Length: 460
Ligand code: CU
Image 1 (cartoon, protein in one colour):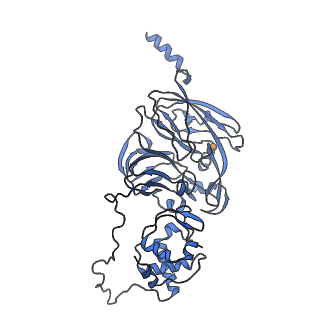
Image 2: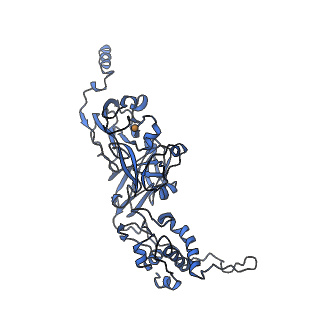
């Protein structure tokens, strides 16, 4: 009997496909979408067909880049299989490709993760098979030399191996992968930008983005959910260099599958996603509004592009989050009676228009610049431009009102619709007059001066 079993075992060695498993074709999805959860309770032989493609895309408005990709998107298609599945992987390299490519899947147990078996010249297809032994969320990437360059150009994605027992159902699942990009020109420099190997070696990216480009998940492309739903994000980091401090502003992760493995941490604010690694985060959306996904190494978010939005609709939940309830003058105790060195210090009030502009610049730099940018250009689809803004030049009172009362709902600036929420700023009338005067006299706007009376007349 024992010999008989041994014989059976021997016939299976050397050919994964010998087992009689049901065969199915993998459902692959482009980011930010995720294939449906796996419902079968048994292993299968899963056929995956992917293509490496080199093509020009837009990294930010007015800036193009030659991406190298799996299936034409950055990240490449999301792959979803089950623990114990046998995967027959077909990798085709588009005939137009200038380079050979391959794939190293971190879900593979075997030398190179499939890289040498899948090395494919343009116009060819390679086939190899592997068994998904370990459940988890794994990065895949091209590993053709120079490896760093292939990854830097966008050749990465995620493969999820669901555990045998399945995953808990959730309402929404999305696919978000961070990557850093290195261009000859600096951030935003227009035109077709070439890859800069030296910047990549120095680890000084011009762009740090989610899903391949600045603004990939804002405006019309924001992720969506309804209040009360639980969202699961499959988060990856293609690198090639940076480690991500992944955070969703205004949310707490109820669950984090640490590093995409099996251990679950709870009630997490920010989770580390290593280059070539992942995390699965889950959170219930208790209140409506815009929730901003960022790399909390925060200059990357507001100055290099690592920012995306989850837009949640539904009625307000004042028991959980009130919105602004009061705006009162704040005077630290004793401030009016302190006397330093026998001199009474007074806040400086602008005595002329040029002083207003000078003081206003300081107010702008500390309160407005992070979103609207130093040159007033704003951030496409998220923060409207203040430079040559028809919205402001037609009626500067709107700027006063936005600062004092906040701004929500759709506005159109220079022909583009913006639907992001600006909070009321805690600025004095003096600071408000100064900053609006500064804005009106900067970046090609129409000039003029806003006075304290103008601000008082627009008061709350
Ligand atoms: Cu490649």
